[in-house]
Length: 521
Image (tube, rainbow, N blue to C red):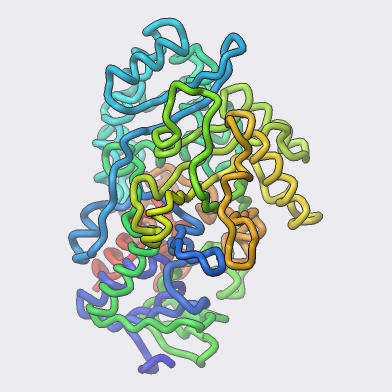
């Protein structure tokens, strides 16, 4: 039960962004209540013992960290750390009938050699260096702006200070830049994948949703690195919940919010335990959920497009490409069926209403970088985790029969992986206490049901470029508008992934919503 009848701020949803907002506001002396529907905090950023009787804590939903600013970790005194992966990616291929692949990592000389062996020259590696040199400069300039007031489009363009790069990434489809820069189909595909994580689009989609997804995937931390959370994603949200409580925030779980009423100055939040008053309400849920709570018309439907799979193995499988150690191949991002043409074919097949014939996916092994998520006995026996994220699996494909479609897609995805293995993956799967294989899969509809992600969309809605649209007039508007967290109600703010500069495990919308509240006093 909430301890009070009224609070300075009531936060709807105890995911990581809501906890960030709660910690900042409580540290500033505000009375704060967090209401969470589930019996635990963390939202999509949790660690779970997914398999009965098995001592393995998997990051069940979100699984890597890139966008979390060190500023938030430092400001809130979080006991949380990430670890770098020594390998960026490995992509298996068959050239001239011979199993091979592209390993990116292990130093510049080794990566250069890998490119040359795959493509026959230094051209693609030189283009790769130039391309990612540009994105790193972009990251260094754009990432620091994410925790400040929302810049105008012109101001962000001036910050980028590279007209050619701005035009290529902010104004024309990403496919044009990829095709101009690279010639090898596999290399093109590796680059494009960052534009398609949780985003159903082609390389030349005129909406530029693929560009926006790509941008958020290459600017994280000012480097674009995707790091492994030590202890799993739950270590972050546990640390955030502790920080919020230490600062004085009250967190109530098992308490679903059923309605929000506001006159623009004060609000009432109705939940399973009754009704509490609030000066401001911060909603750490999708815009669809906000509309439902307010009794308003819902926004345009959002749609997720991914298959999420968690596995526990007794050992890593052997590869057909004997030139690479599986411990290296799986420690980075292991790309499956993600050549440039393969990605486009899969997109077109899904857009036409069918499952991709060769489902694209990417895999990584958390336990190679951070074995702490496994019990000591599992570590000694050589067990490893695998996390798979499948692309181009839009929610619309699952509506007729979610369970059967998910099972068919999972089987096809693992079969595609098996084409690059020297042994079937099924023979490496561990078994739980009931004798079942340690593998679980989630479709977009599963994610909607379990987490409230609209259509399973991991970003809550299409990502936005990190600047104020001219109609927002953020520079002259209210504090919530200036920080990109405004709704149509002055004292109701979005603090989740659906805010401008939302999406991913970042804490940025939570930080920005708290800053907007504190700015208004």
